[in-house]
Structure formats: C-alpha cells, structure tokens
Amino acid sequence: MKKFVNNVDNMLIESLSGFAKAHADLVELHLNPNYLTRKTKATNKVAIISGGGAGHEPLHAGFIGKGMLDAACPGQVFTSPTPDQMIAAAEAVHADKGVLFIVKNYAGDVMNFEMAAEMLSFENATVLTSDDCAVINSTFTDGRRGVAGTVIVEKCVGSIAETGADLSTCKAFGDKINAQTASIGVALTSCTVPAAGKPTFEISDTEIEMGVGIHGEPGRKRETMRAADAMIKDMIDAILTDLSLIDSQQAKNTEILLLVNGLGATPLMELYLIYNTAEKLLTEHGLNIERALVGNYTTAIDMTGASITVCVLDDEIKLHWDSPVHAAGLRWGV
Amino acid sequence: MSLQTDFICSAASAIHLAIISQKSEIETLDQAIGDGDHYINVLRGAEAIVSMTDELAPLSPEEALNKIAMKLLSTIGGAAGPLFASLFMGMAKVAKHNGANTTLDIAAAFAGGVQELIKRGKGKVGEKTMLDVLVPVAHTFIFSAIENKTTKEICIDIQITADKGLASTRDLVATKGRAAGLGERTIGHLDAGAKSCQVMINEVCNLILKANN
Image (tube, rainbow over all chains, first blue to last red; front, side, top):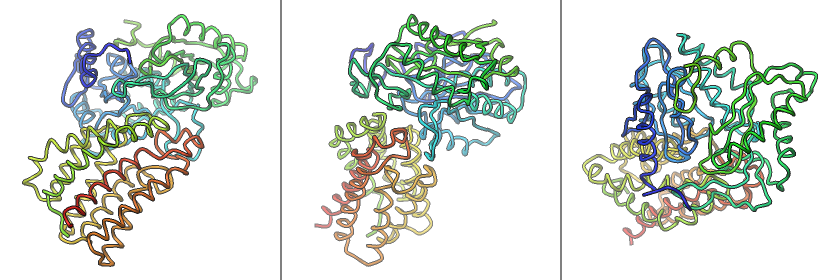
C-alpha cells in the first residue's frame, strides 16, 4: 500500500480536520461523536442529514452547505457511522421542522440510521437511495445499493428544504428522484482500504468488474477489458433497461441529467471521454440531455473506474438541481 | 450455572484474543465475498469492551450486558454494530426479566438476544449470515438446558452446533448483507460473520470448560 498516511488509525480524523480547516467558511467539525455541520445553522427548514462510511469523498461532508445538507456523519472507512453520531448531529441542526436522513441502502447504514431514528425524540424521516442497477432487484431483502445518484437526491432535496417545504414533502421528493435514477459502475482496479493494507479484490490487467459497488463489492460480471465505447455501451444499456427507456420510442425526448462519476483514481480526461461516448449513445437513442455533471462525487477510495448515472428529469427536479448550492464539493449560483 | 459479571469480563478478554488469533481467516473470508472490514469492526468492538471492564465490574450482569450493547453500538459501526448491540440488548432485557441464576435462564437470555438481532437485521437461517451459527446455538443451548445436561455436555453440544452452523454457510448462496449481490459466486466460501460468531462462542465455551475441569 502506497498512501499518504501517518498512522492508519488516525487517517479519518486527520482528513476530517483538514477538510474542516480548508472549508472553515462553510463547515464545522465536531468530534466524539464525529459529525460535521454547516458553519451557520439554518432556521425554519427541515434539517437534511446524510452520512455513511468514509472513503467516498466528497460524499457526504463535501455536500454540507446552503442549498444541500445541514450535517453529515462520517463513519470509519467503508463502515457505517453509529447512532450516537446521527443523534448528536440531529440535535445540533434540527430547527423544529423535523429531520430528514438521506441514507444509501446498505444493511449497516440502514440499521444504524434506523436505531438513531428510533432514539430521536423529534419528528424524522428517511430517504433510502438505491440507484445502482447492477445488483438486480430481486428477492434480496437488502435490495439495490445506493451510489452516485445519492448526490442528485441530496442536491435536490437540500434545495426543496430551503424553500420551507415540510418533512413529508422533502421525503416524497427524495423518494421520487431515487425512483427515476439509475447508475452502474465499472472497476479497472481494486481499491485498498487503508486498515486492510492490500487491495480488496484481485483483478488482472486484462479484466474489468462490471457493476462494481462503491466498496469494491463485485458486481454483475468479471469481464475482459475492451475498448471504452464497448464497455460504456453495456453500461448505458443496463441503465436504460432499468429506467424502462430501452425502447427508443418510449425514450424519445425524455429529459435527463447525465452524471459521469469517477471512483477515485480515474483522471478527468478519461471521465470526459466516457461522457463523450455516453452523450452520443443517449442522444442517438432519442434522449435529451438537459443537465450534466462530470467529476469525482462518489468515490471508492483509490479505485480506478467510473460510474454512469441517469436521472429522468421533470420541471420540479430541474428547478431544484439548478438552484444555488454552496458546499465544498458542489457550488453554483452563488 | 449462573451468570456473573466477572465471567462476562473474562469472556470479553478471551474473545478479544480469540478474534486476534483468527485475523487472517476472518479477513480472507470477508474479502472473498464481503467488503473486507468485518475483522477490523469486530476487533474494534472487542477492544472497546476489554478496555471498559473496570466500569463493568461493579454492575449486575444485565446492566453489564446493556452497557456492552451501547458501547458496541457506538464503536463498531457497519452492520455488525447494530446486530451485536441488539444481541446484547436482547440478552440484557431477558436477563433483567427472568434473572440469570440458572443455566436455563442464561439459555433463555441468549435466545432473547438472538431474537432481538433477528428483529434488527430482518434475517433468517439459510441466508449465509451469522444467524446460521447463532440460531442453532440458541436452540441447542435451550434444549440441552431443559434436558438438564451437565455444563460440560452443554458446552460441547454448543461447540459442535456452532461448528456445523459455520460449515453450513459454505454451500449457501448469500441473500443478505453486502455479499448478497454476488449470488452464486458466494458458494464455496464460509461467511465471515458466521465465522466470527463461531470463534466467540467456541472461546466462551472453552473458558467455561476450563473452569469446570
């Protein structure tokens, strides 16, 4: 393992401290239990809180700020945060309009947020994100994984909360966006969890993991490496199938947001190459790409790879996607 | 057999060492079909409990179990945190209600803990999880206690049951937890959560057997 590290056990705190210093105008770090809040507490709105294991930066702390999250609870690397963190964060940021948790659908995150929700004394609700269409939705009670589509949910729900929308409206909006969003990832290399010190999975120079999860969990299939366009075509087909847009007659003129997300170690040059192909395939299919985002938003530590996310838009989602946001990891209109 | 807080403390130390001794096996299993963090999480929990044994010592067994639950909840994270916390919370609840003065009381408390864990994780036997060890062990514990077997016999019954439960996960398809997405690819691997539970149960039984020899 070759990483910037002093002591593996201190990595998370050192990184959070650096983040808080670098963005001291936006966020405040609280330790034991660990959570981050906006520098200035918002009033008269539903408090939006997310959280999850570290290693996916800028998710979630990078999205704290006006127009997006009120607080985030980072767990250890790839490990869910614990209920005491969520309770402390909720108590710090709630403003008498309730708390909405945005949680990626993983057993650990779900259970920890659920226990926190049960222990909280004020009104709260949870939006579970499950945009990853790689793991086929079947009888698995855990359902699908929440991946980069979470960023879209956090952005838009954060925006609607700023307008003073009540808790049930915020939750319903989050659920709606999640339902019309699909993602799929591909890994060229494994990630290395610092505490483990070695790659999470073995993969040769000629192989890819199609449908990889953001913790290096295997996906649909181990495949032979091909030209980028061939791999991207399969990813787009999986997404369109999931969104019931594979029939080009049905897809015609559907407005979408296209997000090409890096998993940590893929350069922007390649992410834009992926965007170029994805844009071409989706446009040829009849879809209108109304909004786009390219960059590292939901990473898997140092994995080489990328994910593609498509969110089907409507006027409400467009309005809240376009509204101003002022966070470390997402900033426009301010 | 009755449950004493000093036994809970020595069991915690023994479990801590046993987990360390199985490091590479637990890690390898979790990396094969999980996300590779199970060992670290369980170790972090075990360390936290060992370091609080001074605080536990003056407490009643059920208070100690509850305190352990809260500590595990805030220390482990992941899925393992709420699951292990629920196990100890459930044990504390039943022990508080029934006492922990007989072998049957302890068996009932353990079963209560497993029931609480099932409620939290919404799982069942056969999904390639820790339940494939915990549920059969709870059954064996209760039935052996009802049959008035000796402490030694009960411990050996439980160890055999835990071994079998662990072995049963090899041929199962994971349908729960992060390994679930792998489907058929999980066949042939033991489940890491089942393994750590087997290690802990085996160690606690060894501790009792040693004391009864």
